[in-house]
Every structure is written in C-alpha cells, then in structure tokens.
Length: 100
Image (cartoon, rainbow, N blue to C red; front, top):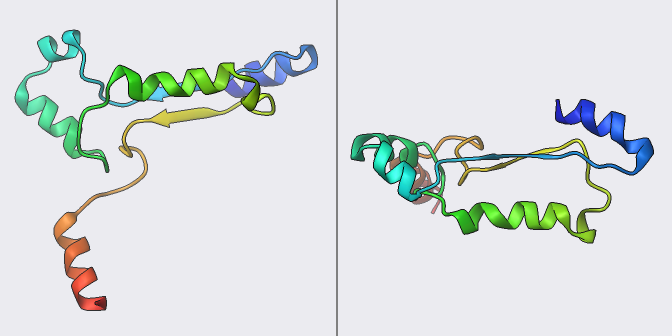
C-alpha cells in the first residue's frame, strides 16, 4: 500500500512512507503483556530491550522533515533489530574466540 500511495502521490509532490514499530513498552503494553510475553518479544530483537515511544518518535520526525525530501515509498522497521536477523550471543562469543 505504501508503494502504491507513493506512486500515486509523487506527481503531486506527496510522499508516502510507513513505520513498523517493534515491541514498545507503554502503560498499555505493560498491562496487557505478561512477563513471559515481554521476554519473548525482547528475545526476538537484536537490541534486547523493549522500545520506548522516544525510540519510535524520531523516525516520523525525520520523515516529516526537509531532510527526507527525497524519500518515498519506504517502510521503516523501528524494532530493535527484530526483523534484521538472529541473535545468539553464545555462538557470537564462540566465533570471536575462534577467530581471536
């Protein structure tokens, strides 16, 4: 949808981008998600902590600024690396020791 909106709006100078936030700790999520659920969410991210509203807020600030005037049709994952890959600290440590 973002790419379609960007294609339709471009001729009118309208840019369209989207943001996909990861797990964000808020009073609502703190109330709705138990400790096990939070641990699962955080465990899936490369940066192993819940996000904050401030972590997310800088992306729309950038997208609304003149600095992003040539950006359109993009989706930004602001998720602590949850969609970037896999984290296994023990394997990373083993490889680092091996390659010394």
